[in-house]
Image 1: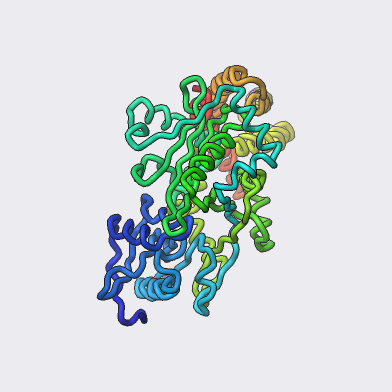
Image 2: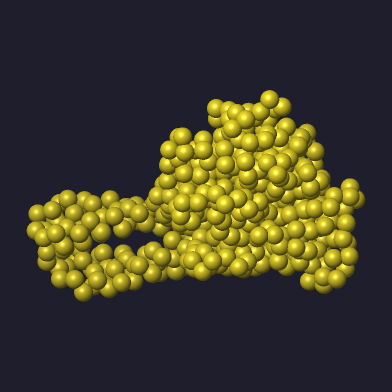
Length: 477
């Protein structure tokens, strides 16, 4: 049926209509994400009812679809075309993130590969494990450490004590991640739509140490392992044990298709995306995520694409998609990440402190300092700060037993808090010196630039260290 004989609805969130379409046409790993928080719904309907759904997030000047349209395979392109027309009427660009290639058959769309998703056939999992010695060893390790797995129904997930313990697990998982929380296709909410999910929890000593939350892929009679969240102190093999338990239960039910979802920037992506993968490794370990999925030896890797209309650039479409994940402004997302105090930024502070301290030593006392004693005090402070930052780095990377790591994290939290207090005081005193001394002794643009850097440096460092302190407090609990 041509688009002209159909009608597009005004965008409105309608979960019941969306769920009906997902149950009828949901064939991609992202289909169920149409019910995720923060997304708007756009429907295409005709006299026979709803033909398709696009769940999308608005970003400045753009609408980014969460995967392909939820529609019959032979109707998906028509629904996508209609959505592009709607977006154009709103003066917005369009991109479809995490499509499985169907839009590429339309001459109106281009595509760029953004990664791959691994696929398994659960009924063959037992044979798969029998041929995979390293996987069997990981499972043995987890069991030897007392890890067991429970399947929980919706009522069990919502029991107050269990929910509180699972939310604490989620907080610790996030605290171990460098970046601020993202949304869109990676929103973490394992308590939403529990009647439609399957939930499994790895337990050790009565405490949850990992959570697996799965959502359906209806027309494939399959499942997406949407959330796999592991406590930083969980024994080796815990995640593998959860996956093994899930695969065996799904195999018993005759489920033929399972995926762990997109491994971003994995596979034969373009050169500039490979470079991005390397540049961003300190903030997101793309290679590590792909390696984890690869070591489970999936039976197939399916390419995943970003699709966008002809006439738009791939760079603009990628930027719009990143803004969707960031929840809007990338600058604000960067500031939220800065406030978390990721380890990589703490290490950057450490290394930047070295040339700054050398400059303080070599700088003439006049006109920068009221006296040589004040200059010497600043140099001594920065030297002690450098020693303390290196000690903090050593504590963060310390190994050992769970009890030893917990004790080290508590010590790191105390040191980080002391550093945050000291650097906050440094920022206050530096600004006071600038207002009292440097304001009347600085008469050049270069001089004012140096004073501004001297004031901003400890202020931003204090924000980073307070964020690191909060993270370490969560991990040390």
